[in-house]
Length: 180
Image (tube, rainbow, N blue to C red; front, side):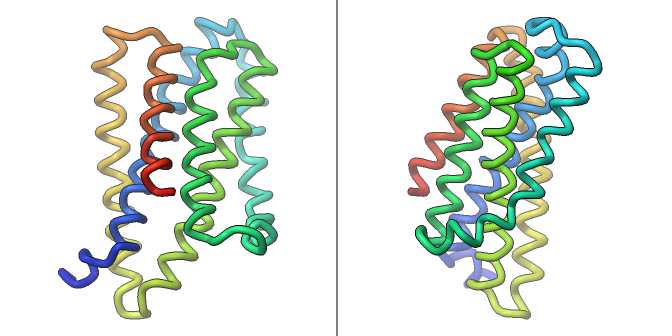
């Protein structure tokens, strides 16, 4: 297993998984309160936005066409960049239309990364090691969720919604720049 951990693709996928999970957790943790307190949306609006969030998941099969023009590992990094952009912009567009737009951006990044993440894992690791790698990816994802939640909880005393979304999104975008 030590040999797997030294594999550059293993580290690449772990770092991007941390960014992906943290980005989604930041967005989800802040979203409902932000939508009500800042954007003044009702439950029906929030429900529609949550439904819109799943559209990119249905369209993730379109990643196949993108792979004809861009390498898969680059698409993974670009997906994280798009996720970070969506998170960063969320605090600046506190309206129904603005939240639909930023939700779509963020969700496309998240879903396309999840698609390429699984594909890259299966390409770079054999049948014996890929289940172990998937397990490690899921465990780092769970730990990232916990850490992001605690960080948000602590930072809410210091930063506004806008600054929380912006700083989280910029951090994710910097990780994506590293991956590119």
